[in-house]
Length: 55
Image (cartoon, rainbow, N blue to C red):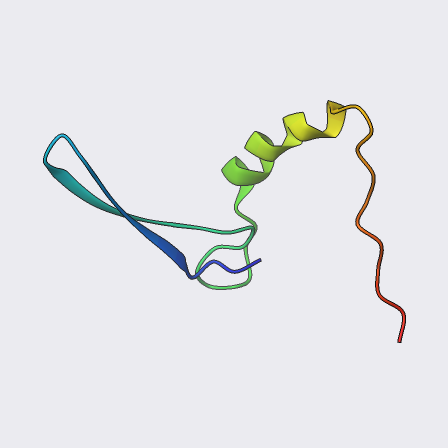
């Protein structure tokens, strides 16, 4: 969920700084392009949800 994950990237002499997460920087709106990119993982074989911890 962390939208503050920042990555500095330099390619071909062009410097860029990219941030990504499931939420946008305002922590209110969903990062729709990222969710759409991850949607393809739903069709992976043997994909199971991560179990929740019970306390």
